Length: 619
Image 1 (cartoon, rainbow, N blue to C red):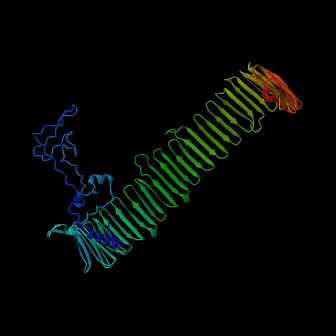
Image 2: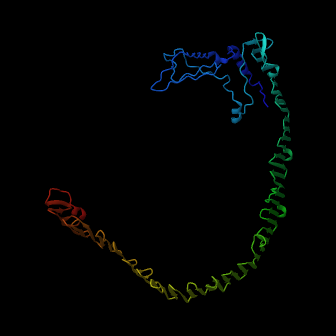
């Protein structure tokens, strides 16, 4: 459906008509043809002319032979004279020729890329322009005509018959495309493909090929091959298509649309939706139902009625059926049958005749439960639990419990667990056993060791590897293959492990030693840090400081009684100071210095006046 009202375009049409009248006609060949240069005729080859000589040993290129009756020029050899060469002054470069319609698209290309253009625009009119000014303005050029009588009448026409030398040559009445605007209210168009009668906005009658549209106020009717639409806006909307249709009535809360693959209908609270064979329908919020419509062994349905607390579901593929009515639940599948009355009664029954196993489970909460299969049974009542398998047996009560596993190879007995006073465990396979009578005694043994524990004493042995003792309240003694340790928590810790040792009497004495060094602290008056790898010592005892380190040629050490006196030696000399330099003396090789009021004065040796290494360290 296409229509082009000209009311809004009136000023543009007047300008376009005037411009077309002032422009000279381009001629039959178009504007590009007038400027196109005619290509020079191809030269006729002379049969008697010798062939071009070969270049650099190449064979001479022969001209392409022509068939008998072929009037096209033969193809020149590759080494023929180039345009502009002195040997061929008559030859010139050809001028490319533009296509007659540059915007034309072949049917194959149009089918591949697609387009929303209904039809290409008509070519520009050809011929002289004539004008007429009374009783209305008229402009004519070729098959084009424009008429104007403002504001009553406007007309634009294409496809009119044209005349050449007094004879009609192109254009027929069947190709005429006329558009008219009358009194700025009525639009009319007549053409081979489109007809339109429009009285905006009340009346529309439009034809577009086989499609017809009629609009009269709120009423709309459209008819096309295989489809139609009928509207009475905003009350009624209906339409049909080749594969479906639609129907809408908003005032009645009704809507529906359908096609070959699905449909949807809504009428107030009622709805129905379909996707292929799958259908869901209901009356919200009272009733819901669904059916997938499968006939190949995967059929599924469901029904939900919320006010009745009712739900049912079925699946054909696994023979599953579930029904819920209030607190009652019933389900059947290939493995089990289930029946529950929540939250008090629960029952499961196996289906060995299908894919299930022989089993049964019943619960009456909170009083009773019993379940069994071919391998396991479980029985529970308040204060008692018994579970049995082919290899294990477990019994639990508030005062006595017993468990056996691995066909009796292991056993565990407890007097409890509410009042756990007695424990007994044995494992015949490993030879381990234990016995505990709280709070008096606990004993255990195995092939690798034994243990004993009383309120005052405990001992743990791992044969040939370690032994530990505990004596009330906090004394422990242990030894193993690497060493020993004796502790009295949290004050005393003594021990040795391999080449390392420690002694701690908290919080006053701390001593840690290993092959790389030793740290000793007598808090708070004594601190000593020794590094055996570097042969260095840092020691602080009250107000004395001792420093030592290994240097080239021997030891470099010094001793300070802070702040009164300092003395030190190294391989090259020695020094002493009173009050860190109030008076002092230093010897470094042949150099000697004295200090008076912290000022160093050189008295022997080199001429340098800076402090020596000994003096710097001493200071």
